[in-house]
Image (cartoon, rainbow, N blue to C red; front, top):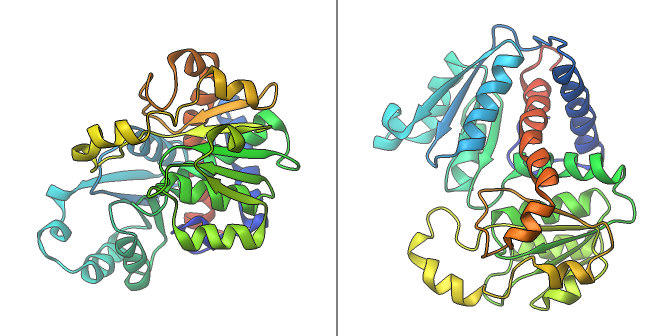
Length: 303
């Protein structure tokens, strides 16, 4: 594992390896056991898109691992003022031990990896969000103890989260159902891959998708950068909500996850959110532990 660019680059064994290390690091953190596995290492964090969880979790994670993280915004980088990404990649490779980038285009992440000589971590693009899904898988395993025989259901926009969740669910052997309106489906190539590699359905029938689900997942109707579509999306997605009716057709004891921030009353009701708040905030916390595992795998001395 040289980079984390998208979840498709990891197989079942790779993901298990990351989750097992994440579990170990979480245990050590909870018990005050120091693990300075990245002492003297520096992670550059490039943010073209802002985020609470991504910045805090990566910065804290590097600190806990004995390294340091540098926050680089658009204002700090020539990349935002016309320097080609291939030059930025080569310059930063001379100073840093790794780069985490949160940006719009997947190509920008791939180009950093292509032209640079250090590990690149995708902190989110419009195409996918691998770090979040590793935390989601970690949380599912914590609560359900296994992935075998589970049905995973995503309700909402077929966005970057849906793309990565499909790959994560199918790779780990779960059945995967996605409920979304026509015209807002996940990436066609990912859906084709999912159908060929596991049990996958995508439909506008919310209750059929949620039927017998062990894990229900949703995300905001309008993602960052889609604010001008918000009113239109509210009309289109108004029924795509995790509520008591949806919970009634899911399996008894089904868990609910949300990558946050959540808009109560839109993609999830306040009642369902609060009933599953412990799972959702464990999921948010697990961003820290899963990303620390990725950092150790990529920047650690054994690589």
